[in-house]
Image (cartoon, rainbow, N blue to C red; front, top):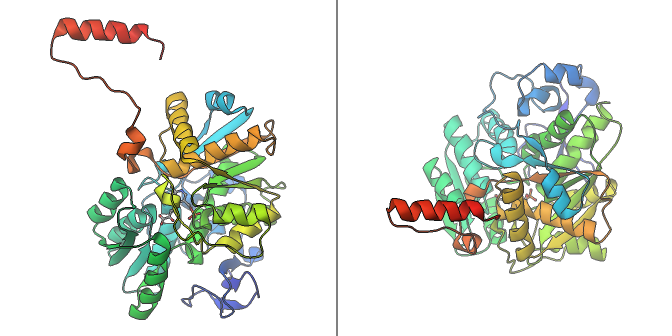
Length: 411
Ligand code: AN7
């Protein structure tokens, strides 16, 4: 039997695994912990004999039996070596872990399979989340698969169309709030507890148990530990989850090195980067976060203490990037490598470029950018602006001349 419990990251109080709790009595964030001795045999050989998805690493996931899990075959995403992108940003050995290849097009699916499995196990009558879009889309899909009611709340006017469409099509009850994501999370959290819906934002520590598998896969695919792992940061859950994955691999002897975790935010929504850079004692929320990367338009990240530990313990780095830098990175990633990501996901690449230019990041080390979501999520006019297409009449001569001209052009 695996020994699994929940533990406060601050006062280390412990709680049973099957108690619904989103914070410790002291107010601290909770983490899922496992007695590593109780996990059974763990080895790369054993893992690699299984299908490449989240569940390949079953021993390191906090469940006992595999037969009752809710899954859409999440994880198992590509790790691309990007030589042209590396030249562009001045790196020597650069990889992109493309999380847009998950079932709903973002990394959230890694966490939702675990979160929904947990919800069923706890007998929840429904699930809920606040979301900048991807969490909503993912929760909606996994709720559909599990046959459990789902309510998602999104900030009105601030969610990419693709994500909103996903949530509605998968059959979630979509509630649009006249307010920010941070206000939505506050409200949903409070109300969900009152009405008995299970909250599946990243404050829920079970979700991060699924998200930590991005670390396992990265090492599995690369065959070694990279020097840096760069991620976009919003609510601060994913960087903490990935770091937990590396720590656990080290603890069970699967690796004996650690990467530096690199957290990237947008200039208009950078409370976490400012916290680290300015060495503040506590997070200073951004009341009106603004950035083209709507996924990470978050001013009051709930998991900042976990993310801070990740950056500190890993000797990590942070950077903030402008909307223009994000758009530029998105376009370079797509046009040089054929990898289409949404703006938030491109932030990791833009941030790495910046950190190499400033000399803070060692350009000779191996760098992995986690690109968290697909470009298809967000076809906003402001992202299409400046990209070219040509209209033509159905005249063969005209089309021939046009094609000949286009082939003669270098770019
Ligand atoms: C593409 O969907 O918060 O730092 O509600 O969609 O763990 O929050 C999305 C976050 C990065 C940031 N990249 O991760 C939501 C939501 C993409 C994202 C993040 C998000 P966290």
